[in-house]
Image (cartoon, rainbow, N blue to C red; front, side, top):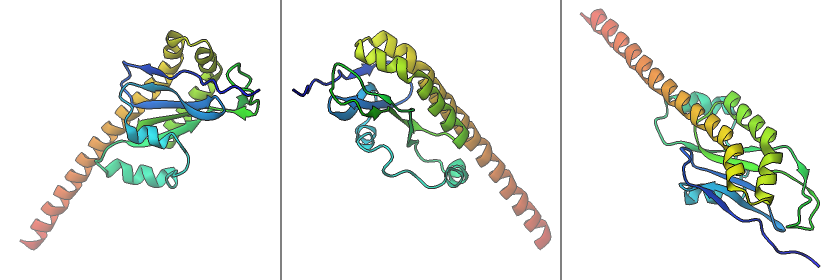
Length: 180
C-alpha cells in the first residue's frame, strides 16, 4: 500500500532573504520550507529549479555588475541521500534544492551549495521531526551566506557605477581639452 502522506510545509517569518527549500514531499518533490516573503515567481521556479539555468556565470557576473535591476532567482542542489522516510515508500536517492532571490558570483554560489550539502541531513531530520526551531537553526547559515553575497554584490555595483562615472567624466574632460 502506498502512502500519500506529505511532509508539512514550514514557513519562517523572519528571513531577510526570499527563499524556498525543495525536496521529497510524499511521492513527489515539493516545497518543504519557505520564507514568509517568498513570492509566487520564486515558488513557480521551484517546480523545476534548474530548467532555465542562465548562461556561464562569468557572463552573468560581467553584465550583472553594471545592471541595476532586481535580484535574480538562484538555485543550488544538495548532495543526494537515500529517501527512507515514513512519509514515503519511495527509496530512490533524492536531494534538496535551495532557491533564493539575490545576487551572487560563482564562488559565493559554490559556498552556498556547500553549506546546503553540509546541512542537508540536519534539515531532513528537522522536517521529519516537524521541528521548526531545528529547521530555523540549520537554514540560518545558508540564508546568512545569501544575504552577505547580496550585500557584497550591491556594493560592487555601486563602486562599478562610480568608477564608470569617473572614467566617463575623465574622457569628457580630455575630449573637451582636445577640442579647445
